[in-house]
Length: 125
Image (tube, rainbow, N blue to C red):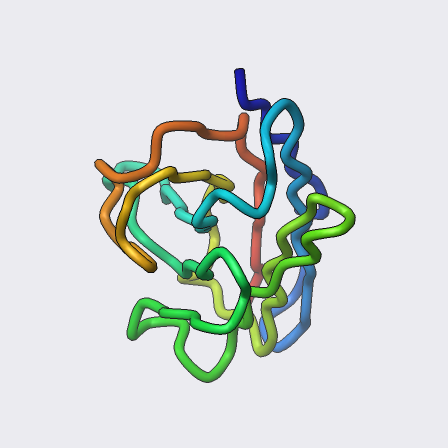
């Protein structure tokens, strides 16, 4: 049983930065591809970023490329999402997710089998 616990959300102003953290408990951390997704009010959940098992490969949604950075700390079972230059359209509930997909990396929600409870990020203009 995999448990993911996110933290770090909050209310910030446009242009500010924020770092989300997610701890994975219950399974071997390094065996999972990890990702961040988000869901804004009235919209479907969407992919934000993912990182491979070793941390050597990352992929991002076009909307966050150049502003967000995903990273992982395997010895401490933690994945991070550093968000810079936040915009009001980044306002959403952010979810950490883990995948045992055989793929090297994935941006497909269907590949992720464990999800955190979500953390709210609100960006005011």
